[in-house]
Image (tube, rainbow, N blue to C red; front, side):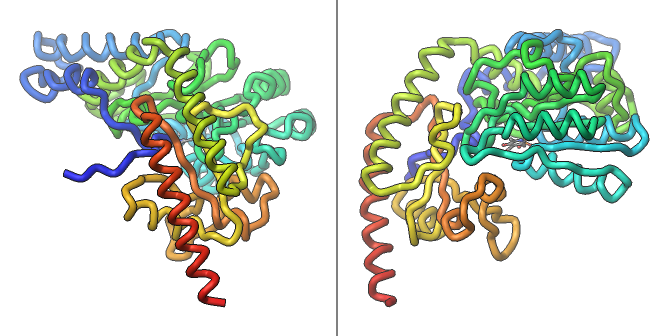
Length: 383
Ligand SMILES: Cc1ncc(COP(=O)(O)O)c(C=O)c1O
């Protein structure tokens, strides 16, 4: 089967064979309900305990702080709605470029009486620290959520500084670390947040598994009530195979992390030299950034069109548009950075992975060069 070159690892990653091997027994004979008090149940309960330890160890948390969910979106909703339900409506602050699974629940809370503030960005896509700290100091938000690394630009935000300020203003602070996990060292304690979101499928684990890492002193209302699984915060029989896979994927992260990150960074440098030679505008170029992510545009070239052409040429990359509507809007992240809408409409993202090879990057640059020439010729004919 023809397999296009996959350059979209921030969207999802292929399942690691070792993760699949770890999961298979729990899709076959090891089927017990972890709540059952017999040998079948004990076996799956032990598997959950092991996965909890593996996830906790990957981010320097305690296993009892790991609440398994069906992915990052659910963990983000659980924190935001769960924390909001424990308070009278007050002020809620989120980053200007949060993923929709933070932004949408925040907008819902706004309709329930919460005052919603946005933490501003600088032109490089990082948090505008001075302005954000001033806002926190003045407004004393009860709940604050800021992503650790942005899914589009890869920009890494100064969550440590924000967390200190929010704590001293008496608020709860959460970070969405879905994109950060596996792409930079991640330490729950050092970040100083009350809660942190993770997702398995961004680290070669299965889709549909994630976790909220939660300081045990924080009280949340569950989204799903029922049998009381996950400390009563996420009822429902656990997706044992997926959780086992998540645990294994976390365990594997530790293997040669530094050399893997350096290897990916070197490939990205190579990619970005080629992009510069083709005349790309690179976003968040000067920000501390995830080593695998490049977000860029070419003047006068539509991002969606470029993604479609490259798809037909055998390369899978992402556009920067919000494609949930019939008329894709330019990336909110870029608009929040002050990028003009006509430039933002051209944005496309390449996100490299641990299996990306140098020749794939070189072939991509060749295909991109050809595609740009074709598109420019078409534009020239149209005028
Ligand atoms: C920053 C960020 N947060 C949350 C999510 C949602 O995670 P999941 O797909 O596991 O629901 C994503 C997925 O793209 C993401 O990039």
